[in-house]
Length: 175
Image 1 (spheres, rainbow, N blue to C red):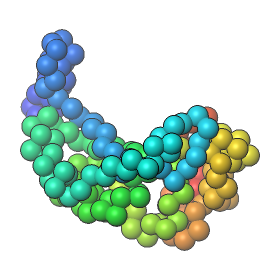
Image 2: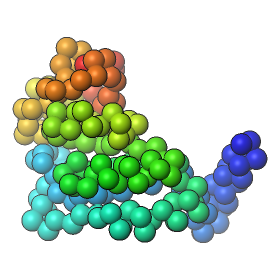
Image 3: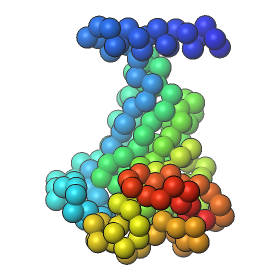
C-alpha cells in the first residue's frame, strides 16, 4: 500500500514538473449540462436549451483512463448532475472501480433522491450563497434552506452532514 501511495505521489510530482499529465487523483464530470436553478452569479442555466448529457458508454469509456491516471475520486457537477436520468447508474459503475463520488448540487433535487443518495455518493456539497434570505434572492429558489433544523423533505438520515459551498455559516447541517 505504501509503495503504491509513493508511486502516485511521484506521478503527481512529475505532472507538476513536466507538461505531461501522469496523474489525475480527482476528476470532475458533468453528467448534465442544464441546471434547475437560476442563480444571478452563474450563467449555466442560460444555455439549458443546448442540453448535453453523458451516457453510460461515456462513463465506461473513461474507466481505463481513470485507472491509468490513478483517479480516486470523481466530483459530479454540471449543471445539475441529478437531472441526468442515469446518474445512479454512473455512480454504480464508478463505485465498482473503487472510486469515491462527490456530488456538487443546487440541492433542489435532494429530496426527490433522498433515499438513493447515501448509497450512491460519499459526499454531497450544496452550493449556497449564504443565509437563506440571500440564497433565495441570488438562486431565485425557495426550496432549500441551510440550517440546523432544516433538511430536504424526505431526507431519511437525521444528522447527515452535507457540506455547503459558498459563504455558508460554519456548522450548518441539513438534518
